[in-house]
Length: 122
Image (tube, rainbow, N blue to C red):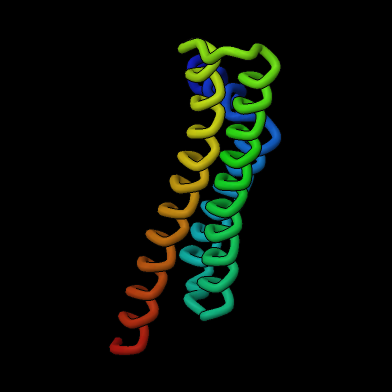
């Protein structure tokens, strides 16, 4: 668990923890839709919007990570592997979290669509 929290901190807490919160909201909305048998387009649209937002937020974090890495390189005046690796790590964790949330949202939408079609044919 400490490793996961460490990686989330490496990716920029503002970005990664926001994405993890969005992932939690996506999961709660999906479970709520399943329990209440609410397979409406409104539920799927909300989950989709949150998934897209998490993805975009992750890539925004990547952009900030790269800018910070380049700023550090410019301040030092030379490129070291440690400096480059630190900036790249921050630049990659945010999009990874965003992609994870996006994929969970898409999977939830697919399941809700399948359940909706089962309800229609039943």
